[in-house]
Image (cartoon, rainbow, N blue to C red; front, side, top):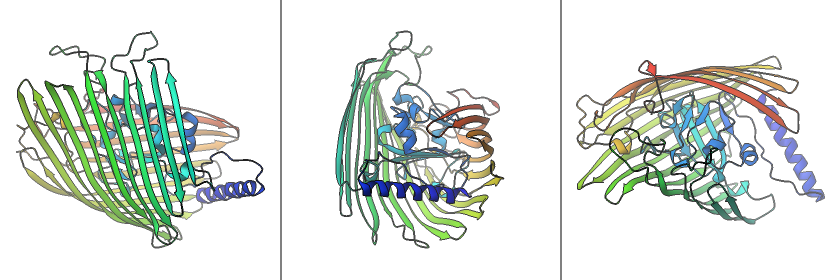
Amino acid sequence: MNRSVRGALLCAALSSVASAVWAEDVIELNTIYIGTYELGTELNDVDVTGDDLARTKPTDLQDVFKGEPTVAVGSSIPTSQKIYVNGVEETNLVVTIDGSRQNNKVFHHAATNIIDPALLKAVKVAPGVASADQGPGALGGALAFETKDVADLLEVGDDFGGFTALEFNSNGGTVTTGNAIYGRQGGFEYLGYLKYAGGNEFKDGSDNEVVGSGVNLWSGLAKFAFETADAGRFELSYERLIDDNARPFRANMGGVLVGRPVPPTQIYDFDRQNIVLSYQDARGPMWNPEFVLAFSSTDLSTGDPGATSDGHTQSFNGKAENTFELSLGDIVAGVDFYQDSTDLAYTDMGVAYASKEKASNVGAFVQANLEPTDYLTLSAGLRADHQKFTGVDGSVFEDSGVSSNISGEIMLGNNLTVSAGYSSVWGGAALAESFLLNPAWTYAGGVEAVTSENHYLAAEYETNGFTFKGKKFRTAIDNARAPSWSGGSALTSDLVSDGYELGVGYDWGVGFVNVAYADVTTELNGAPADSYTGN
């Protein structure tokens, strides 16, 4: 039986059982996460579902991905937690929150995408090979966060709900409180959530205080939606996270051992916002449109009143696409755009300056997800992009490129599944991080477009409750922009990430256990890359 059919039957079976139990009013069911298999390459994608999040109850991004060996998250302090997929930092991936493109590369010593796990409904990672409709510049793949809706919080038949939660962690004396209210009436839905966490530095296993690990965090989410069978679904969401506290002078380092004397900590004031307006209509089969218009921004201020660095990035972006349902699968086609910018305002001992880079892009894409037989799925896509880049000195560069991807999965008998994929990506000119922007930069040599090639080969064998997995992958990024404040604006590097993943699991029906291992080697310009040069 093919995977799509199995998923649909599972949905039908669970829905039937739930309806029968509800009708007899015998027992109240807990929340059930119901999903179907998607066409594509399941052996490569990483899906953190609602079930996974409910089971692990993550408090930070390390907890979200702790079961995925090829997704690594560094640091014990959220302010400096970065995500690496197959050894490639998230700044080389297409990152979205509720479909909104994120442009968060502010400071290489700080995190880029801090998000409250309590808000998450699901997280989807496409390591290396990403589909054309996931957005432009998917050099090392794609990472998509999806926040909760009212339907994820209310039981069937309920129209109003809410909760309040209070937590205390004795290590650091951290108090966390979260409050939410949500409901629906007719076709209208509303959701409001606010969380605050505050506390002191925590201690490590040797009873030493971890410098700069104090907590002062605000997180919130507001959603309003209207949906009817005839009109489709309109949704407006606003999500914001503020983290403001003393951190290590370089947030991802224990201390600065060379160079000028520096204090052990400085204030890191981090503020990220995300606004999304979307419309979906899934009446099919040939008219299933989706429209997204979004704005995201990240602000990071460090230092003290006499010496501050204020970095700001933002993205105004959107897309319009339609899914055409066919007998063999579906085809997604559409257009998208972004207008990204990054800027820095710097003040120190009477010296002050401001610098800015910006880029705009318009793209068109088509992605086919097909299932020719019960045992074979294929996915192939193509996108074309045109970009305009503006440097700090006003220099303007325009360039165009094409990206492609193809992947497939075949079931050999009833136990063995084999999958493979390849992508070639044109990413245009990458913006520098805010904290490196130098008003003295010139772009006489131009700014090269960054490109990449990704491929993987994976296999999975299932027997008697056991699952054995293996995957080999490689990502090669050419002309990755690697500017330094004093070294110039047009520096580039070539990155190669090569590795494999092995895993074994056993499922006995009411429980399971999984063990997985990943080995990743990264090289920068032919030499081993460490955590600093690999930024």
